[in-house]
Amino acid sequence: MNDPVPQSLKPRKSPIQARSGATVEAVHEAAIQVLLADGLAKFTTTRVADRAGVSVGTLYQYFPNKQALLFAILSRHFEEIAAALEAIPLTRDRQPLTTIAHAIADAYVSVKTARPEATTALYRVAGAIDQFRLSTDVFKRLEAAVTRALPNAADASFRNPARASFTLLSALAGLSRGSFAGLVAGPEVLERLRDEARLLAAAYLRAAAEG
Image (cartoon, rainbow, N blue to C red; front, side, top):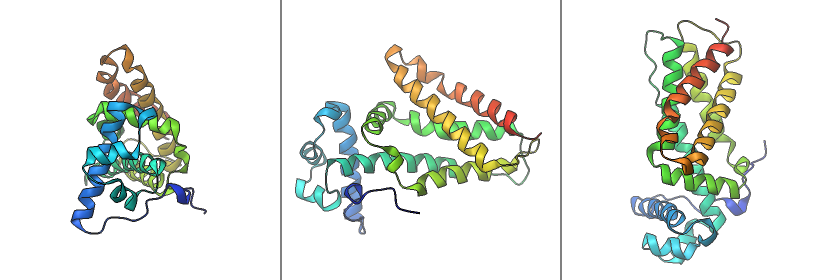
């Protein structure tokens, strides 16, 4: 399969030493802060470098352009969601499907709501960058993490758990995007996101299961 990520959006290099890793982390955090403070229209590598306390030349050692940096922070967000889903504990004893559904919903929402303002900024980035160009590896991780959890249900089975995982993740993504778009109406939108995500996950998985 062809790599969907064009070369122009790939990092120039990956950090190897702890110091270079800290530099990249600082640049990532600075990029979020610039997005929050100035918006996407005024987002520049110069502003990010200034906020990160590094030179623009240092930033360009890792990211060839502004788009590559935006792409990197969006990719990081998806990786954090994947890690949260992968961390869902599977007990030796099988669990009710509702318990598993709630664990999936909670893991997904926990990343989205950890820093609501940053997530809102990242949705703006996603609107400006074709996120379908993200590495297929991260989407495979998301689906694999959910697929891994489904067979642990004591009261349900799935003919095609991979398909159920894809549909559930797509539904959670839509619910999350809609909730963050509704933030203009007030913070209560996010206050109910977790409950709605749990309801959605449990209802869909119950409907998709064979029983």
